Amino acid sequence: MFSFLLILGCVLFVISKAVNNALNNPNDSSFNKQESTDSQQTDGKDPDFEPLPMDNEPEFKPVNNEPKSEPVYEQPKPDPQPAPVRKDYGTYGHLFGLIGKPLAHSTSKARFNQFFKNQHINAFYENFEIEDIEQVKDLINNNPNLCGFNVTIPYKQDIIPYLNRLDETAQAIGAVNTVKVLHRDGGVELVGYNTDWIGFNKSFGALLEGHHKALILGTGGVSKAVKYALDTLGIENKFVSRNSTFDIMGYYELSPSVIDDFDVIVNCTPMGMWPETGQCPDIPYTFLSEKHLLLDVIANPDETLFMKKGREHGATAKGGKDMLEQQAVAAWEIWNRIGE
Image (cartoon, rainbow, N blue to C red; front, side, top):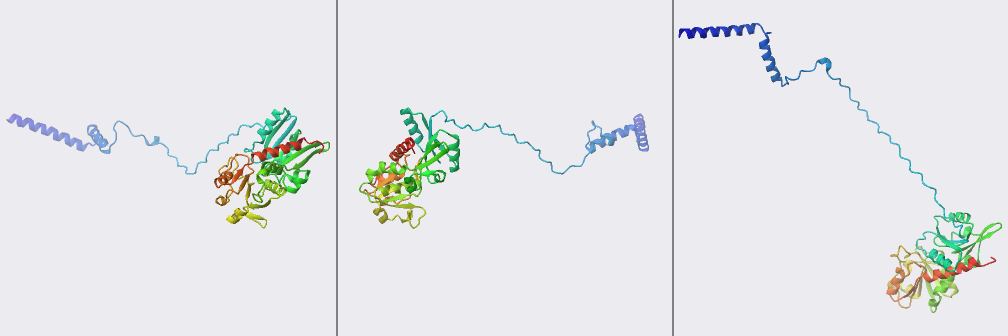
C-alpha cells in the first residue's frame, strides 16, 4: 500500500512540473501546435489551404459605369435587280390595245386576239394598265406600230387633251373610248372617237322600244355616251349621282313616285364589276315592277347584282356583254378606215 502511494505521488509531481513549464514557456512548439489547430477550427478555416500572402492578393479595378455603345452593323446591300423588260411588239404588223385602270376585268384582249387569229391578221391586242394618263405619251413613243387603242375608266375624258382632234360625235358627247393613231410624215396624229353610244343603241335599242323616261346612274364618260344614245332614241333621261346638283338627281331623291315615273334605269357606274361582284347601286329596288327595264353597261360578270335584284322584283334586265362586242366592232371599223 505504501508503495502504491509513493508511485502515485511521483506521477502527480511530474505532471505538475510539466504544466508549470508550459505556462512559463508559451513558445513551446508542442503546446502551440495544438493551439494553432484549435484556432483554425474555431475560425472555420480549412487547414489544408494556406492563406495567400498579402503581396499576391488580386488587384480590383474600378467598375466603368459608362454605357457601352451598341455595335454598328452595316446593312446588307440588296441584290441588284434586273432592269424591267419591256415587251417587244415589233414582231407584229399592227398593235392595238386598251388603256385604263384597273384592267383585270376586261375581256377585250382575249376577244380581239381570237378575232385576229381566226381572220389570219398579223396584229396583237394588249392591255396597257397605266397609273396616270401622262403615260400614254410613252405608249405612243415606244410602239411605232401602234395603230389604235380603246380607252376605259377612268380616262375616257382625261384622254381628250392628248388628242390632236375629235370626230363630231365624240366632241358632242365629251368622252372618248376609241383612238386612232395615224403615222404621218410630220409625226403621229391621234384622233378620238366614241363607239360606246353605237354599242348601246345596237345592244339595247330593241328593248327600249315603248319606254319613255330613263335614269342614268353615274356621270362618267360612259354615262355621257349613254345620254347621247338615249337622246337619239327620243327617250327623256336624267343623271343620278351621289353628288346632286340642279341638273343631277341624288340617290336620296329616288322616291316611289320617281321610280314609278322613270321606267328605265341604266347603271353606268362600276358598282358590281368583277371582282367586286357583291356591290350594286344604292337604289330602292323594292319600288321596281314588271314595267321597269334595268340595263347594265358592265360586261363582266354576265349578271350583276343590280340586274339580279331588279329581276327579283319583276323587272327586265340585260347586261353589257353585247354592248362591249358591238362597240368593239365599231372601233375595228374605224381603225381600218382609209383616208382619215
